[in-house]
Length: 126
Image (cartoon, rainbow, N blue to C red; front, side, top):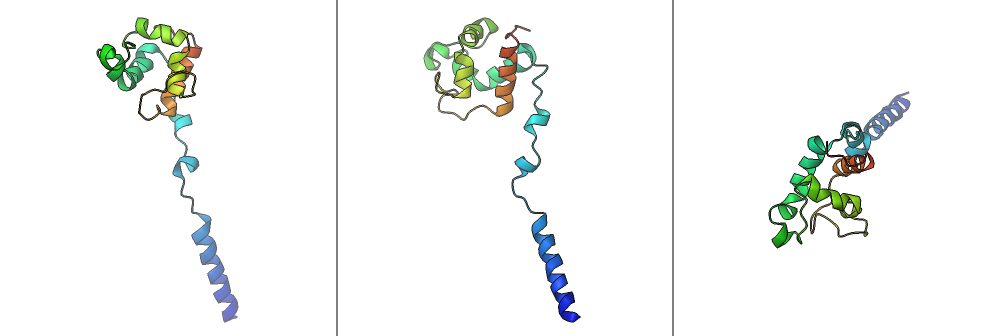
């Protein structure tokens, strides 16, 4: 009887220690899909802040010196690059346009999804 209890105790401890382990929190608890609102995206409320944070260091006031003369700091300046597809292709880094940000990490998925949603809804100046 003691041997059965020992084996049973070892089994319970083994199952307990191995059954609850998973080291990929982003897979177990995904947050991007739940917290990334792409339904109510507007130029003024979301896109401007993304472009200001990610693009306008080079493509704002300093565009002539470090941004290849490409300004993205206003809706009117950004819209032609949205219309010809180069803006989205650049941030997707899909090889169809120069990967942006230049020598930088790709934008986070939520920012890209918001930009895609805004473009798909007509890229309005709203």
